[in-house]
Length: 64
Image (cartoon, rainbow, N blue to C red; front, side, top):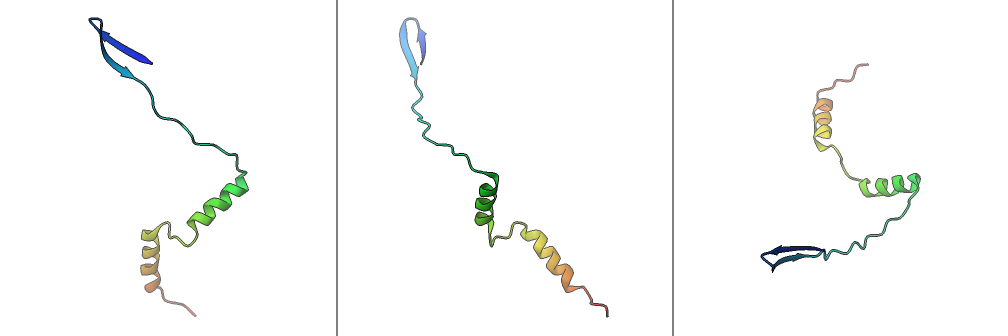
């Protein structure tokens, strides 16, 4: 607790009301990779690069 006094009168009392209720768990690396892969599945991570590649492939000519 922190108390501040000025001329023997109470000014301010600061108390932390935040309770940290988060719990941490240990996850093996393979399990963590599996969780991350499941979250980003079917998502385009770099849409601007995909669009650039699509434009590039439109101009490609196949040689025989």
